[in-house]
Image (cartoon, rainbow, N blue to C red; front, side, top):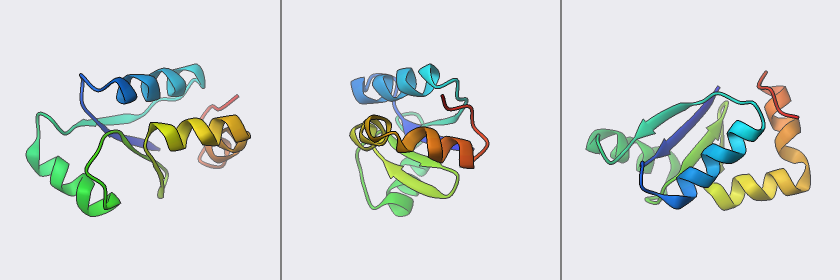
Length: 88
């Protein structure tokens, strides 16, 4: 399962959505702008305060730049397939 803490207006969140969509993935998105308690949860889980914050399974991937780096290295598809996600 993929979980992404995000906001609607964040360009990096939008880029992360596009990348995940291009891989044929589904994810749970948590809007931290609308839910302050979920933002606190994100900060506790990740140690970060910026969005997006992305988990694939139990692995904290990080933000969009981290997700894109995994994709460029070819490791994103491997991680997605280990989690039963589409990945191509």
